[in-house]
Image (tube, rainbow, N blue to C red; front, side):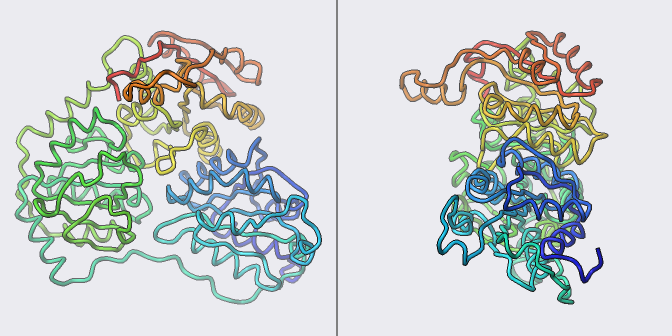
Length: 540
């Protein structure tokens, strides 16, 4: 097909390929089959899933491993509606997701309403932009969609594709592609001078880094350099775990939803004479982090990629810029006086045993056993629930994007498709999925996707037959146990019935053996880790 023969959907597919996209996920429908064919012609593999929500999470998994936008394809009406949750998740978790939906032509919609509703209006609150394919502008539309999705604070962009316009000839416009924003640093001036002065004077500085540092070019290097040159201990949000390898003596691990971790970390925050908030957005945090510090009594410098409109915390000095560039401007050439004495090693030791890590069996023992079986570069995904809070505290990351999860929206059912996407994008790396029994029951169909794609992913199931986090909240509130406990599923049998392997374990030794077999297998393995209800008590 020559350039002059390209259709509108070919132009869109070509632009997405040029942006680095190599995978698209979804379920075919008559309104998107031309788009799917165009993606295939462009060199973008379309992967069939069992649900559009899971398709979006698989697309996110590929983004974390490749850096290219994820692609979700959904047909008209119910297909588009099924994808809403994952699009909302992408908006909150800063995931560049291109959402392609099919729709009837505007003139057709005047007299035809089967499956028809306004896709753009539905996605408007949770996307950076919504476009409808127009004649003669397919390449411009695709350029704008990619640029907006990959901007300094990434997010989802929706493109609605009227059926009659998809296969129309679309000669190139010749318009130059818009460049994605590059790093910007704070302007020199009194605020930067004052912040640098505070850093020079600080005896107990503390850094908190959040998910926006992940999309900041050179973010990990800027954080590591600042931590080591200025001797600043680091707390990260769950999403930013691994931005500094967590065996580093100044790494205090992740924080966000654990009151147990907060008992160790909040006193350090209170002691700090300078807080540096780097790419930190409290969208990942529980309410206990609201106003966890006061700029009236502490020096607080915030370097964020977007202005503070959440008001969950305040800072005396705030720079809106690229977080890594801002941190470098603040710390370059500064000799700090930081001296926490033995407080940081003591805090690290306290966190190392606070969640039941030393017990013979239980949720923390499961996490530690799998971590020991996985190499340092292994990737883990985790679903929402009590196990996610515990795992996010216990699991050690040695690089960024080694622990994938939903943190802003905290949506259930994300771990298995995230793992599938990561394994598709990086088949040479071991990927393990952690899920609760209730979460896996929500998306059992995607085990068939793992089977069909021959993805050797160990699926670790925390099997306690309870929505443990909600049950704990009911108990703490003095409420009765209601709609949180359920009968058990034989996940070992399910794994085998779905074309993979299955095993049930109740000890560290059995789990170690199961992991060895799962990592050597040619297909997925469901490993059901059975323990008693209420095992999370005192561990979150």
